[in-house]
Image 1 (cartoon, rainbow, N blue to C red):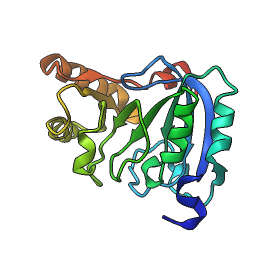
Image 2 (tube, one colour):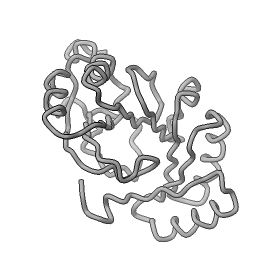
Image 3 (cartoon, rainbow, N blue to C red):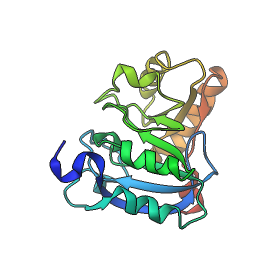
Length: 206
């Protein structure tokens, strides 16, 4: 890892804000979001392409990040990206835990997961699949469905997670009407799956 990140004591911060979780198992839950820069997975439908390059974002000290969180009423924090596991997250997550903040991680699983997490949302990407060890760590998997064939990849991933892992199919936003209908019918026939929608986009919050 590049020395500029001081092994995770400094992180490339794109944005931070207190809002309502809009996707997956924790939909509707108030949470403080930390978005980190840097991602080499490059999904064609990514809605945060600004996150791909780490070197264009300011470096923030992990203690400064936590100090801002505890000034809000937030009891939970979501660390996302980009791909947050590109960095050592031990310092950030431990400092949050010390302050009794629930720690949620959103990751593709492509890299080793560091840190202490109360909830891990794994969102596997076929072009750079998760490390096998990360499937067992997932509390939920959130599969983005942009075309019907993506369901085959979702099923493949579902066989690698633990029996208590929550399973979600989420329509890619630009084709949401078509894919939502497909997912609804598929989930009705395969009820291990749940539908996830991007609620925050519908109600127009960050």
